Image (cartoon, rainbow, N blue to C red):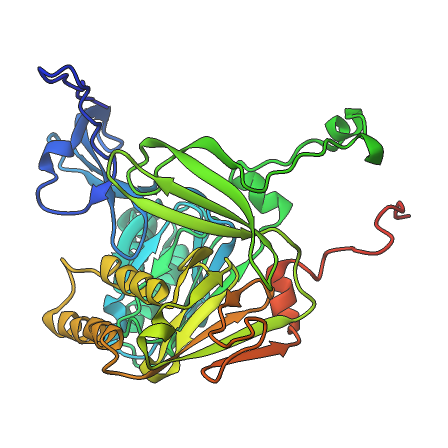
Amino acid sequence: MSSTAASIPEGGETARPEPIFREINAQQTDEVVEIESACMACFQTGTTRLLPTKIPFFREVVLMSFRCEHCGHTNNEMQSASEIQKSGINIELQVKSVADLNRRVVRSDNSCVSIPEVELEIPVQSQKGEVTTVEGIIERTIAGLSQDQEKRRIDHPEAAASIDAYVERLQKLKEVTTPFRLLLEDISGNSFIENPLAPATDPQLKTTYFTRSQQQNEQLGLYEQNHEEQHLLKPIAEDEWPIENLHGEVLQFPTNCPNCQAPCETNMKLTNIPHFKEVVIMATVCGTCGHKTNEVKSGGGVEPQGVRFKVQITTKEDLTRDVLKSETCSLSIPELDLEVGPHALCGRFTTVEGLLVAMRDQLDGTFFHDSADETTKQQMERFLNTFDDIMKLERVITLVLEDPAGNTYVQSLSDDDSEPDDKLTVERYDRTFEDNEELGLNDMKTEGYEQKEA
C-alpha cells in the first residue's frame, strides 16, 4: 500500500494524519491503492484496487476489486476491518416477495449462508466476504454450479443432469412463488441484512446473538491462556492483595479511535452513583477527527433480577434526567414502534435527551443515503423529524429501558431520590432462560467451584 508522508507547515507544527476509514462517497478516488497481482484465470499480471472505507449500517471494511486486461477476468471482494464482536450473530430472513430479493446483505469471511427449503448451504470460507443482495447470493451460487457444465455433460452426464435440476430449483427461488428462509450465521458478528422498515422492527427479520464456543474462538484466532501456564503462576494470599483506592483518580491508557483508527488516549475513572452502585466510566476524545465516546461498565455483578424503567417525557425536566445505561440494556419507544437492541448503543452515562440524540444519530448515520430509493429516504426523513418534535415537547412518548442484568439506573425527580416519581415506573422481573443464556449465567458455576470435578 502506498502512503503519503505527513508534511510539516512553515509554523513547525506537524499536520494531523487523515483518518484511514472515511464515509463512503464518490470523492474517494484519490484513496484507491493499486497493486499488481497475478490473474488466477490466465496467470498474467492484472491490477488489484484497494479502498478502505466505512459502509453505512455496517462498519469499517476494505473493498477489493481485481481486473485482468489480458483475459477480462474480474473479481470483487470485501474484508472486514473492524474488530471482532463480543458475540456471534444469527440472522433469519423470511423472503415472501420479489422485493425481498433486493435487500442488501453484508457478509464477512466468517459467515455461513443457508436456504433450508432447497437444502442449500454455503459454508464458511467457500465464498469471500461481499456486499450483495439476497438475489446476488442466489445468482453467485448458480454461476458457481454452472461453471464447467459443458465439459461435465460429456464426462459425467448423470452428475451434470443432477446439477441442472438443482440450478432450476434455484432459479425458481427468484420468482418467489413460495416463501423461503435465508439463514445467515456469523461467528465474528460482522454480518448484516437490511431492514427496509428501519427504524421500525421488521416482522420478517429475526436477529439473535450467541456466545462463541472455544473452537469458534480459535477459528477467529482468539486463544485463551494455556491452563498449564496458569498453574505456574503463584497464587496470592488474601492478606497479600494490594490495596489501592481508585476513587477520584483518573487513569489513562493508549487506544485507537473507533471512528478513524488514529492513536489516542482513553480516560477511565471509578465512581459511585448514589442509590445505585460503583461504575467504571471511560471517555475517549480523538485529536485527529474529533470523535468523542463515553462508555460505562458496571463495577458490580449481575443483579438477582432484571429491571425495566418506563419514563414518560412531557416536560424539559424529564429530558434532563440522568441515565446510566449498561451494555446489556435495550431501549424502546412504543409510540414510535422503535426498538434498539443492547448492541446498538454501548453502555453510557448520559441524560434522557442524550439517549434520544444518540438514537437519532445512530439511525441517521447508518442509513444508506447514497443507494436508497426516494420513497425509503422520505420515510426515514419523516421518522427522524419525529425526534425533533420530541425534543420540542410537541409529542409525548414513553422511553422504556429494559436490562436483564439489572445494571441500569434512571434518576428520580422526587424529593426522595431513592423512590420513583409519578412519571417514572420501575419494575423488577425474573429473567427467562434465554436472558440467562445471553448473559452466560446458565453455564456459570457459583457454588462448589473450588472442588475438582470427577
